[in-house]
Image (cartoon, rainbow, N blue to C red; front, side, top):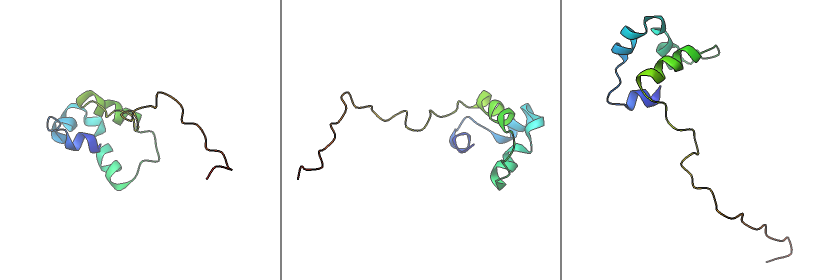
Amino acid sequence: MIHAFYDPAFSFPRFAERFPEQRAAPIDCLVGDVIKDMSAFTAALAQMTPPPPPLGSNIAKPSMPIPARSATAT
């Protein structure tokens, strides 16, 4: 939902018009009432703004493993 907030093309009023059954879901998220199935909300949100990439997906992977240091080395 934070990603949607910062997306200049996203509009919460348009979201509520397009998905009236999800009108309460943004409020539930804001107040922390998320210990329930929010998959319908996140799927509706993804239709209006693409979800961000998974955390860590933009971190380069090392091409070669870094060797472990020996315990006796100083």
